[in-house]
Length: 164
Image (cartoon, rainbow, N blue to C red; front, side, top):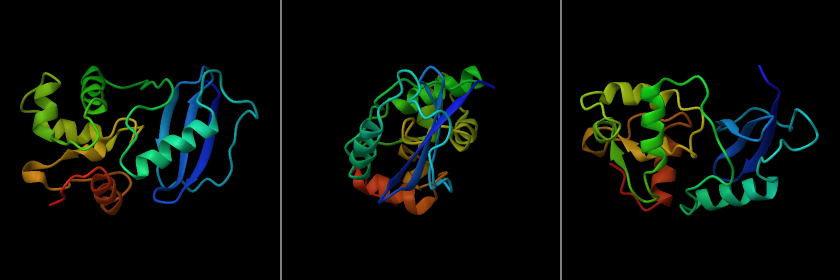
């Protein structure tokens, strides 16, 4: 496995958020409510990874429903072609909007694969960047979320979404 650089940022609304970057600066994972307390890895920032100040600004904007596009490159190694399609669809759901698992499945070219979309969302390595909190169950029910349903509800409310 290539070297990974981890940057941990404390967020008032989201808790500690750990960003893991590949050596070339691509975001590989984002952990909400991380237990890590310190940044680890090389003391130098990974090539092309966003500056810590840019990550802090992005998180602060996300907390109030403003941020959508991550300030650097990201990658999802090891994902199936279906998962990549699903993550692409979800990454393009605009702030303040939501889609159902069935709508995401259809947009990814696999109508009827709503449960598979749910499984992909459960395995999403970069929540917020691929904003899986914007994917809801039938009828607008919350479904699940890696950061917990309370966080999913808070993110949706910050983005102006009515929560069932």
